[in-house]
Length: 100
Image 1: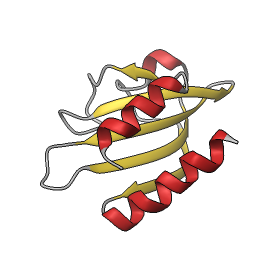
Image 2: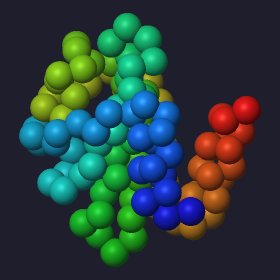
Image 3: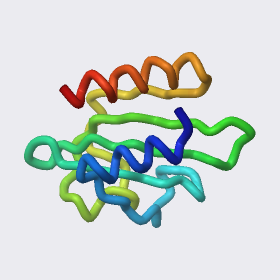
Image 4: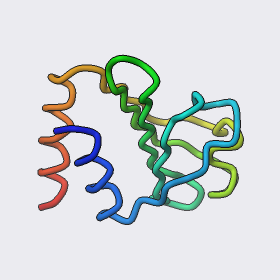
C-alpha cells in the first residue's frame, strides 16, 4: 500500500485535509483530520521530505478544529509512526478490518 492509496482511503472516510501553517509539523507535511469526539481528533500526518514516506497517526485533543496545523495539541492520547513496509502492511490490515 502506498501513500496515494492511504490518502484516497482517508478522503473516502470523511477526513479533511488541514493546512499546515504552524511549527508543530514539519514543512511539507500533509495533515488529514477527523473529529471523533468533542475536540478529540484522529490525525494522519504524511511526511514526504525524507527518502521513505513516514506516516504518523495521532489521537489528540485540540481546542478546536481550526487550531490543527497551527498549534500543538493540548494532549496526545495515541501516537503511531509508520516508517517501513512491514508497518504499512499492518496498517493496511487495520484499514481493511475497520471497513467491516
